[in-house]
Length: 193
Image (tube, rainbow, N blue to C red; front, side, top):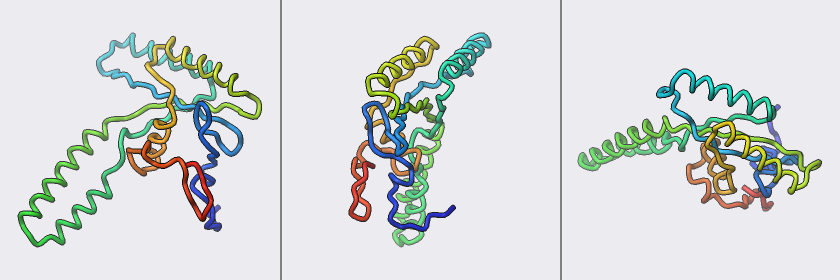
């Protein structure tokens, strides 16, 4: 179904209501809590260690079957910047400036290829705020954190600035998500993103 109402904000489109005590609160009264998980380089691990890691993940997913796994690039895309520089090279008449722009483009390509390998991994868990108080959610968040540590995952719960950065990178806005204002103004109405 296509959207025909032009007065819908990004917040409404995504079904997000606000930031809660532990994560993002959705319009259907769920709070999504995000945990950043440090990836392991399995290329340097023994077969037994890799099997143990897989088993630990299976144990975690069986204990918390509603956990979702998210993988994102570690940074924003440079495509728009590269298009701009390519256009500037074509427009520029001064050969020395053209050469500098070409060097900028090469540098941007090298940065992007280095950062493309910087994957980030997250676990997301949705709590039902209609049935669980903030205190109950806090206890469960602590249990998840403890179980992540027990299963040998190096992780931490994301706070508001890190959640904003995750959303910004995921939606291709910017890698500086924490600088995005909390309030989005759309058609005179305030929204939190």
